[in-house]
Length: 312
Image (cartoon, rainbow, N blue to C red):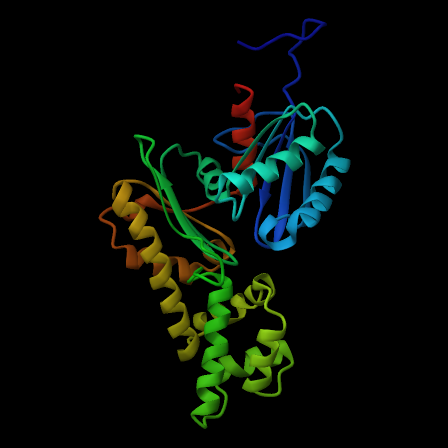
């Protein structure tokens, strides 16, 4: 039943804030109207900011980004849900929760791993999420509430199939060709041109001099676009990425149930249809209709979860 305001009309919907704190940026949506099917079509304000990932920018960096968002949002926020990449431990979630509570006093706060908001954005209570952006991870929850996860360990320990991994493999291809005495192939030529490298050795120096994963992940579309054009080296790299991503998803589905839907998300899977199709083929699911591409921004899942904090 709809509540009434002081003048007998419908009461204004509570204002909530959804945050998607990814590896390369922070996406915020302020909403004062509940949308449909997990979307929030009455978003009052949408903000894109620098990344506020604690593991990447530290406490001060995250605080500065959240402070700017809070200044633009203003007061009156009743609930905040943040889906954050790397929010793996209770300690990291507690730190981010404390920052949010400082900037949004009086609001109910929840911090979850960003895979959780993707499931909500897809309008699902149970399913498996496979993300390939800067890094990679698979996570899921079955109908009994049991959860499982694979990958998402960061670029030093994993993230195979993510954007950083794809470009790292392309740099390795450049070095392989160089030390084999071969002329650089089309993929390597394009990569050297994009990085202003005179040869593979300078490319390697650049790779070590600027190790930030999001910087190199930005070149992953170059590699995958060349795979779409049939470049043999790029096709090998794409096939390896698809194998790694499918392995992550299969592990989680194997633990939770093969009849669960699989939602693909992250820039590489959403924007690179050939890679997404290769992953789907490698899944070999009996029902291919269980595989879907996320059709809206994950931040709207955070908005949906923020509404649940206040019983909406």
